Image (cartoon, rainbow, N blue to C red):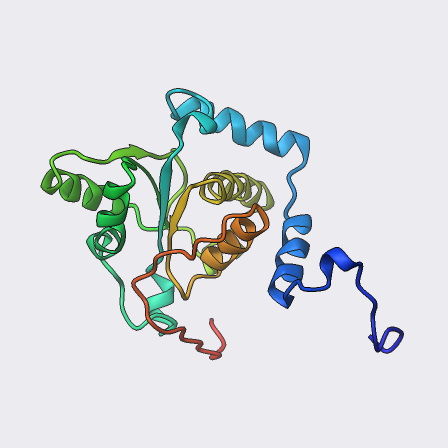
Length: 208
């Protein structure tokens, strides 16, 4: 920064915000290699029918974060899946959106969805992929290199699906949701995501 105290921006970028530059850098750093994109597309083809994600629009992506975020007081509470659905149910019905992609480290979330959808007379059509659950930062660090590689590919698959969703529902405290939100902004998706949290908590206590 000392070299350019008064940087000159090309006219097309003059009115861009700091957040815009941040997400462009994020998008560049997270760009998929061709073999990674092939893996993601093959995974989607395996679990989605029809096998192309573009054929499932419009859909809404829901990410539910719990476990260690609650344990370490970064979240004031764990929210039920119903609390997430209550945020957007009216809006998606108005827009005739029936497909929903659900992602969470908590494997019980899919049982919650079954119960919710029964109450809603089967309105929602579930999109999901078979992925490893109960993975958090601490457990990820304890894995072998090979295990981490597998989980990373699963994460990148989730990221691709959530970033391409027409609407996004997430947990404000989740770093993952902020990553997805940044990727979506870089893709031109400017609608803020739904979240049941009304404040962001940060606990700087060192984790064991």
